[in-house]
Length: 221
Image (cartoon, rainbow, N blue to C red; front, top):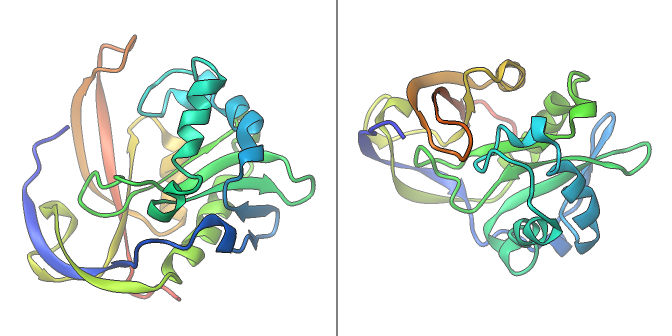
């Protein structure tokens, strides 16, 4: 990772612990249902995690080794860990089919701020589903109760130390132009770009990474 210069800021973040999955209400967008994880999602999640085109953009960079590995990943979003994450499954409203996942994970603080991410099955790329999800999910995120906090954050993400608006971040590999368009359509702006060695097994290359931020200023909640 690039060398970061940190600054301390006063801001807000969603109050934690989050509501448990059982108390979170699904939301409906035009074509999607965004809902909490359940134990019944294992097979569909494993299907998503066995698509190489999808997994190349993840931290492990490879397909799931087996269903038990997927079960371990899913456990991060099920009780009792649901209190520390805000992730959802993304389903077609017309059929209920799980076509993706997305949200904020525990420890998703690459730049000191919460970080949103998402994955979609390859057969649903290029149809506007990621943009539709992100816009709908952001409505949930900004509506969460807030608490005042002090954070150490990437200095390039803010104008300086002190009191600042809350930010939500994301980062992508430079070659992932689809995700770039999704983020920009949702109002994110690029604030940082750097190159580092991709140390994931089987890659051994330099990768350009791009950081994005979305400010709470002006968001409806």
